[in-house]
Image 1 (cartoon, rainbow, N blue to C red):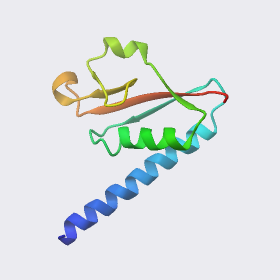
Image 2: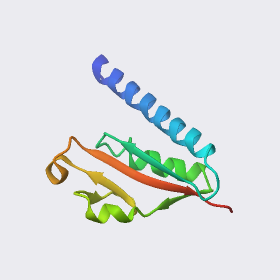
Image 3: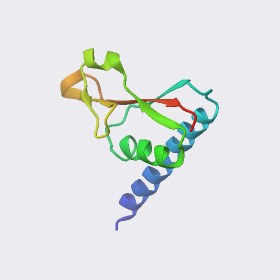
Image 4: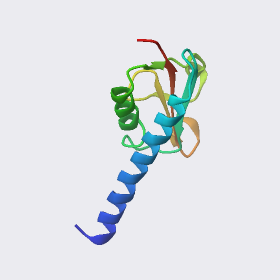
Length: 106
């Protein structure tokens, strides 16, 4: 594997760890019943749905919550139900991903 490609892969892995840590730390500070929005300006599954899946696996008190207003937004549902993707063609943005969590008691 060329050096440039290896470096890109390492940076991507580090970014995913950072995103997961930010999401986890923010959720840790959330009160039961509170909401937390995870949003990126990325279109990659690794930085979006994969981070959400890993976070849900590691945080049993986290639940995805529907974003009712999203039905009126220029976006499409993400690969995971209750997540949303804004792609350049649909939304005329550079691209976004949005997921909303709540903390529940188990």
